[in-house]
Structures are given as C-alpha cells and as structure tokens.
Length: 83
Image (cartoon, rainbow, N blue to C red; front, side):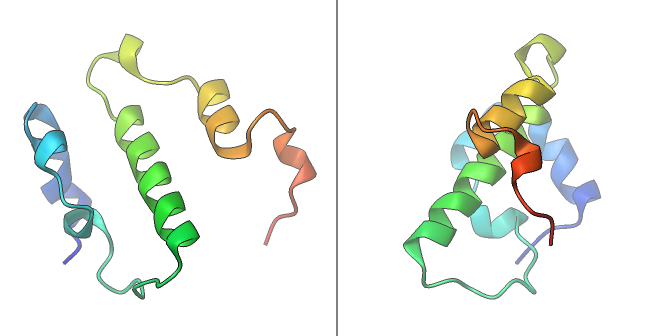
C-alpha cells in the first residue's frame, strides 16, 4: 500500500532502504495495477529517477537538464503535447 510522503522521506536517510525498497510501498494504492510491461518499466524508471532527485548529497542529484534528458531523451520536451 502506498505511503504518505511524510512516511517515506525519513526512510531516505537509511542507506539500506533504497536497496530493499518495494515499489508497492511508495506507490499510491489507488493506482490501478498495470498488466503492461512497458507501463511497469516506465513506472520503475520514473520512480528510480525521483529517488535520485531526493539524494541528500546535492552534488549526487541529477540536474533538471539530466532529468529532462532521462525522461524525454535528447528531444526538445516542448515537442511533446500536454494532456
């Protein structure tokens, strides 16, 4: 079942948490389970990227440029329609 952000953030100080993290522990339990492998892979990818952004060491966090490149590739993000 998903956790409230206040419950998740203290876990980030534990170096073993991210190694032992179950994705189901951080997802909103109202999200429908997907049977699509592509959706599941994308969800894992974005969640991993989100946790990288929460690194306590600021120099270890990805820049916004790196985050955009990771999500959109080298394409201009404005080429993608909103909605």
